[in-house]
Amino acid sequence: MASTGMFVLIIWVNDDPIKGNVVKVTNIAEPRKAFNEYSVGEKVTAKCPGFRGVHNGVIAMIGSLEEKQQLEDCLKGDQFNQLVKTYVNKDQEERTEKIPDKTSSKTPVVKPVVPVKKRKDTKRKGYTQTSRVARELEVTELHQQLEENRYLPISQVIRESMDILVTDSRPATPERDVCIDCTVLQEQVQSNTNQICGLQNQLQSYNSQLLSTKSQLQSSLNLNQSLQHQLSNLQYYVQIMWSKNPGWFQSSRNDPSTCYRGESSFQQHSNNNQQISTPQPSTPQPSTPQPSTPKSSTTQSSTPQPSTTQVTFATSQNETLDISCIPVSTTPIANSSFIQDTAASSTVAFYNNYTQEILEAKVSKVKNFSKCAKVLLRLLYSDQERQGRSISGVAANSKYEAKPALQHPNRIQVIYDIIIKRWPTVSKKEINGKLAECLKPSACNLYQNCSDQKKKIEDLQSENKRCKDTRQRDLERKDDEFRKLSKEVKSLELDKQIMQSNLCQNCSDQKKKIEGLQSENKRCKETRQRDLERKDDEFRKLSKEVKSLELDKQIMQSKELERKNDEIKKLSKEIHSSKERVKSGPPSAGGFGCHSCDRCRAVYLTREELANHQYRFKLQIGDGLT
Image (cartoon, rainbow, N blue to C red; front, side):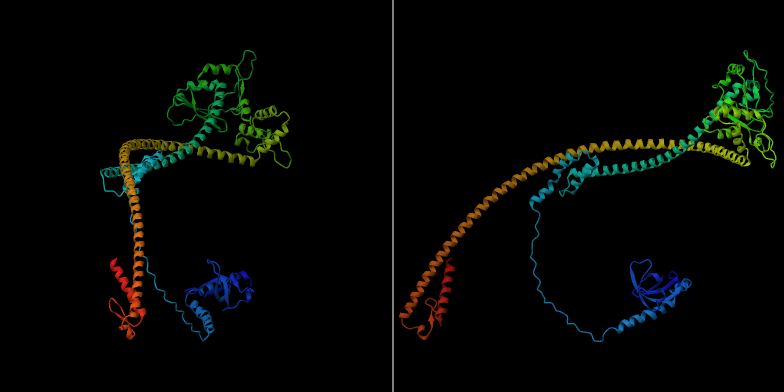
């Protein structure tokens, strides 16, 4: 059995309460052995998922991957309790058997009792006069702080000055009431500042929304500019067509309904390669324009706009070209003399409503002839005209059926002329090969998909225009809200300036009061300094007197000691004389082995006791004299 498919149910014996987990055999750290050598009831050290390190446990069950669910079910209910009783209790019994029966009794060590030392009664030192004066003179440092922080905001200076004044422990004064009024004014300024901050945050949110809307509007404007650029190109081509076809302009002027509605539609039923020619005085040409009959004229419901016209040119294959918003008053179309002169002095050939100059302009940016041939073919032939057609109408191989050739061979010829004029080294055979690729069914389907994509793009452009209008309205509405908010912010700023001016005035008053307090404190400081100097002089005088008294005391003590020494000497002489007299005199108490004092008549057994008594007696007499 693979090692990854073996699982064990481990009971963690050190948990309280005891729990278990189903883990892989690879989680066992000790003992390391083959996976099939582990047995039930074996003590192991394994890793527990979700906990660091390794832990002690007992293997209760072993199973494969299919039996993992059964092992997990054993963790629930009475079965797990039975496993705990079976394996964990055995382990505990084995541990208790190893404990020896005899236990050595240990005698506790008794530490000697150490008497507690008496703490020294230290009297708390009171505040000296100097520290109290220093606390009271903290206000004098305000001037230096103002000089250092004169570029700080006024509110911070006032706050610091008020903190110093409030922390002063002196009794209330009339200046303290002014400070309280200043704190109230500061609270009002703080509330107004918070309100201004809230309005500024709201204004910033409006600005962010306005910027996002402006970015969306800018993208819409960029798209609109690209569309306007395309429209201007179409207007240029239409102007050329109007200038080369004066008959269309005359018909549009003669029809009052189309002039009023600003719309006209024309359909050309010729070979779409007709030539509009007018006789010229120098080289007359016999060519005459082919007749063209209008097939249908459609009108669209719109609001009359006298300054613009919308023209729709239709081909024989339902190809339409819609041009809108052509200003009549600013274009050369309104100048009929210019149109007639231009038509009289030129002969222009049209190929599917395109002149050769227009076709050359359209492919002027194309870099190779193959792409140029495909672009020209799609411009000159519609999808229906190209479907199921070939270039020559002849099959390349007898196996295939020949397809009919394209109509209007003069269009093919103009393709040859444009390509050979730009790339002289290209042959007609190569051009036919590229045109044949464009006539394949796959290419037609691809072009059809492209046309569908163009329609979708037009729909998206219309939707974008609608979104642009809505965004413009939203932008105007937000601009109005922004102006209102700006007015409110300006009014709040004016209020703030007024409050600041009032605060500055109050600040100046406070400064004057602080200067008065500083001068008063300075005067108090000078008087206290003089008092301290006077007390120092007195202290020096007293110290000198104390020193002189100490010297006198020492002198007196030395004299007293000398006097006592003299008395002791006299007493010793008297004692000596009395001893001699006792020796020579009649027997008294000394005859019986006793010794008596001459003054108090006290009797002592030994001479040493009598001498001590006499010495003490003399000392007492000396103390009485002193």
